[in-house]
Structure formats: structure tokens, C-alpha cells
Length: 123
Image (cartoon, rainbow, N blue to C red; front, side, top):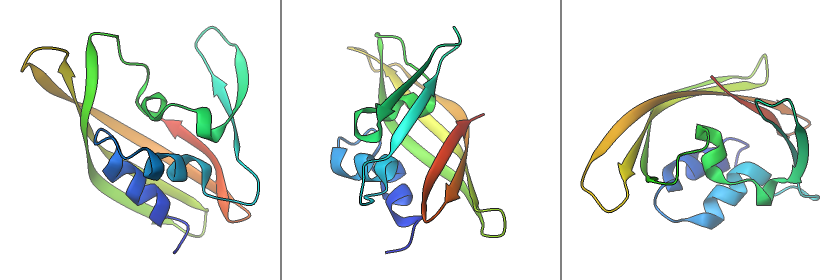
């Protein structure tokens, strides 16, 4: 399995309840669990094991009244020379308890080092 396959599976699993694939996407199943730095708008930096990072953090925190229903990847652009992957698409959120839903765009830039995910930026 190549380095990008767990990421591809993770995007497919988001919103569908396939937690194992989402954890593999974030952790890369390396010999030691990856550790992620979470940067928030109030300038705090926290370091947490990748397995504890919620998948929804890739899309920003959703207000409690919304739930993630589905993720649609529209572009998948690996760049081996710069060890990056740019993923673009949209995610569908639904207002809890109603049929009301809408799509929001996303763009993620994944960087790699030593055969593992180095960081992910959400633009």
C-alpha cells in the first residue's frame, strides 16, 4: 500500500462512520503514533497523538447543531518532487434533526517527510 492510500481511504470514510480508516489517514500506521500540533485562533498550540485528533478538525469545528454527512473529493494532486498532496472538494453538513443540508468547499495541503505525514494545512 502506498503512502497516499490511507489518506484516500480516510476521505472516503469521513461522514460514513468508518473510524479505522480515518485514524489510519491521520496516523499513517507508523512504528510510533504520529503526534499532531493543533494550532487554534487564540494562538494556543497543543500537541496530541494523531489517533485522538477528531476527523472533523480537518474541516474546522462544526457547530453542535450540524453533523458531517459526506465528503466529496473533487481534486487529488500529488507532487512527489515537493512531497505534497493537495486535496480539494466539498463536505456536506446537515442540520441535526432536519433534512436541511448544504455543501462547503475545502482545500487541504498534506506534506510528507520520511515516508509519513508531516503536516496538513486547511485552506
